[in-house]
Length: 366
Image (spheres, rainbow, N blue to C red):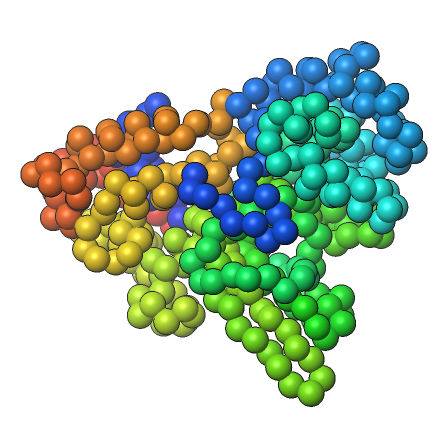
């Protein structure tokens, strides 16, 4: 499956609606919290890269880190916003030995469980920050389906999970299958944070990496058992991709037919105003019960902001997202019953000039 770019007008529609201004995550031998520097990105970049700063201090304190670090290393192509330290971090990590990768992930898992432990005991904070920041700078807001292998896990459909490390992955299912040795778990992941470290930095160790900050919704779990293999296949998607898929999947059978795809694209590109608004309402109505609840709108907003993380500085805190939800309901919940019906949604949208203008974004599309 190739890259997916999302239709833009429902982003505009949502921003127009709420004004211009987590759920618990389950372990997969992973951890529920991950350090997020996006609230203080510029300050942290200065702390890491200044002479005698955090990077230099950690290099001096860790022989393993100093051995793998390449000051003047660079990847194939420079990218906007990058500093030499970004390029050195990517190339150094790409070329590092499996021993260092195991050490890095072990320390991240054991010392990254809470902020205090991370700050005081994790020895690679500068490397972690530079890798995360570089991946966000390079992220083109596209999603890909990729494959990774792991241990057997106790999961169920609907679980929200996050990998606590830079997860290695493959573009092809067959390549991942070669790594699993016929026993274990293959993760079929639709991710919006995929970084092709092999293409960019000529890594011999990895093809792709997924950011440890991205969370996923488990969609399906199935077993493949025969005389030659015993494999569990777990299908999961970045939360917004999961919501978007459900909006296209009209019969809710877990797969998207060509007819469903063409019909919805026809609505988005050439539909009437009411058809487009009905489609947008269906996107926000996550459980498809005919009403948008505050919880559904919060989940949708949060997933969009997570997807657009690199474009929002500072990154929005949870309380700000809840404020946006309150604005949405103040505007849309006309009878103040705590939910927004399709009639309320369409009526309010049709009276809003910004929303109506946003619906014309594809009028000149081929």
